Amino acid sequence: MPEELPGEITVLLQRAHSGDQPARDEAISLVYNELHRLASRVIRGENEGHTLQATALVSEAYLRLFGGQPVKANDSHHFFALAAQQMRRILVDHARAKHAGKRGGIKISLDEIYQISSEPDGDLLQVDEALTELQELDPEAARVVELRFFGGYTDQETANIIGINIAKVRRDWEFARAWLHHQLESA
Image 1 (cartoon, rainbow, N blue to C red):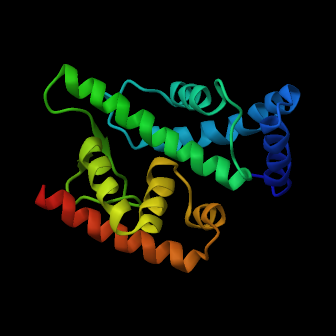
Image 2: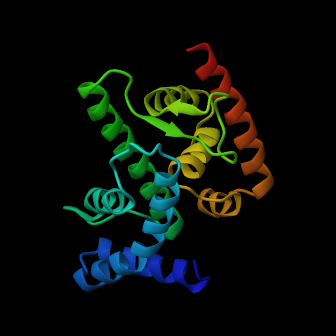
């Protein structure tokens, strides 16, 4: 994302929260490409039979973020953290709906970078449940996983969003991966 864009998005989100409809529309326009890029990264990790596409994921995230009330985001980093959280919820809701219709649920493929489980596929519902437990144990590590895995953010982007240094992001990521791996293996 261009360096000047986060500041511009922050200003537009603040104006939109005050009821400025043109600012809301412009904010939506500016964040669309970034959200689509992130959604594409997340969807790429899904198995081939997965029916949710990046555009549908972005559209649903838009509805949840911009539908009804103005977005209550402090700045662009907070907004993209909220977007990652919404993408997680959408993917989990989608998995639950699919799981209700057939045994075994939906599987997501975790690539080498985001490898949490030693198995080639990890069950999204199990990952979500384990992440919810991790959130109680270490909220910041859980947030790193949410941003990296469900938001598709890099270490640097995650550090910028959370407001911590990249070394802390990497430590939290390594801890969370090991903890989640243990949880998923013992499930």
